[in-house]
Every structure is written in C-alpha cells, then in structure tokens.
Length: 122
Image 1 (spheres, one colour):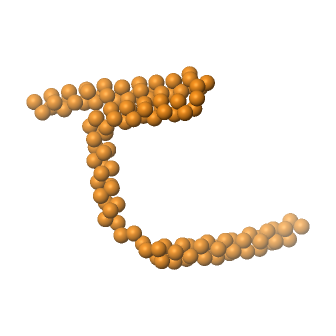
Image 2 (image 1 turned 30 degrees about the vertical axis):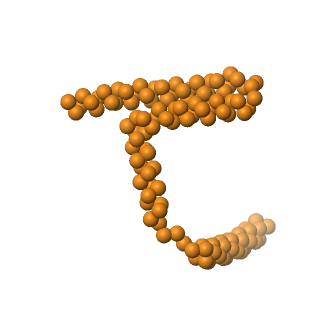
Image 3 (image 1 turned 45 degrees about the vertical axis):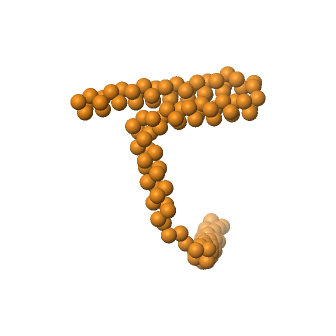
C-alpha cells in the first residue's frame, strides 16, 4: 500500500514538473513574442509566472525537500559565530599586506627575468 502511494505521488510530481516547465517555456516564448510591449508589463508577467511555477514546484517532493534544506541551512546560519568588526578589519589588513608583498616579489622577479632575457637576446 505504501509503494502505491509513493508511485501515485511520483506520477503527480512528474505532472507538476511538466506544468512548471510549460509555464517557464510560456514565459520565455511570451517574452520574446511581446518584445514590443512595455518592459514593465513583461517583467510583471514574468514575475507572476515565476511565482506560479515556484508555487507548483514547491508542492512536489523535491520542492518540499529543497524547502526543508533551506530551512535547516537558515537555522545553521544562526548558530555561526560571526567575527567582530575589529577581527574582520585585522584579517583584511593582513590579507592586503600579504597581497602587496607577493605582488612586489612577483614584480621584482618579472623585472629580473625580463632584464636577464633581454641581456641574452641582445
């Protein structure tokens, strides 16, 4: 009985994804056909179609899994200990100094090799 429910859900999910693809395709084709219309109207129509397609997509099993993943990721972000402003500025300063030092070393090496090659070539 459980496999029957799963197979029926997957059949409906396939149909839902087909409808989502059809809506997106209609938006793309409609946008190109109505290229002469106002940009505002085309953008509003595309946003409306995207909302409808998103609503349908979130009603599928994969859509629900994505929403669950998004919710869990949001909860994990809340647990992160973010650096203070001072730590961020100090780390940025270290990175900038390191980049300048490496840049100067590479410039010096490039100049030296260029001078050696021009001496050999003549």
